[in-house]
Image (cartoon, rainbow, N blue to C red; front, side, top):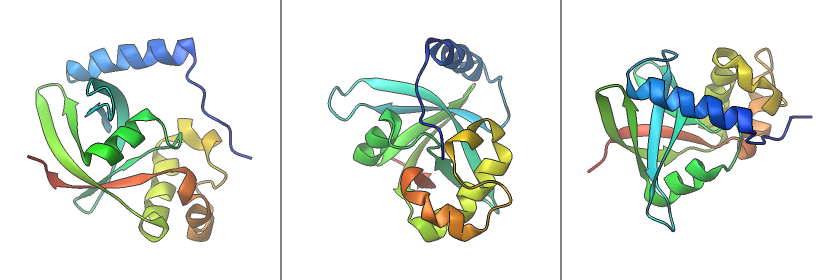
Amino acid sequence: MAATYRLSATRRLLNRLLRALLRLGLGPPRTWLLTVRGRTSGRAYSTPVELVEDAGRRWLVAPYGDVAWVKNARAAGRVTLARGRRVERVALAEVGPEESAPVLRRYVTEVPITRPYFDAGPASDLAAFRAEAHRHPVFRVVGSAP
């Protein structure tokens, strides 16, 4: 059974450090700083995320489920992705289980730290990822946002 995500004090500290590194353009190569406006507060919130890229297409995966950035991104429909001086304002489209299954499998393979939060593993077939797609929202980055 997959683990449930809890934001511990250690994770908060590590996220704060990673946010600072990403603002400087440092950090793991696929990691970006996602910033989105809060759906009720209007305040900007930032969190590190891993982009999945394949054949020129990009996706954002929420390995921990419907966390705050997911709810805010759904409401806003767009986010800002930043890494150092490179800043992209992008639109997002949430995808269903058929499109998200191969993305989730790739994510689990490329980002092993999140494997405890998935029932399916890198060797699982796509049906296993389709079955748990409802627990891990996937957004396709569809282009620039106004």
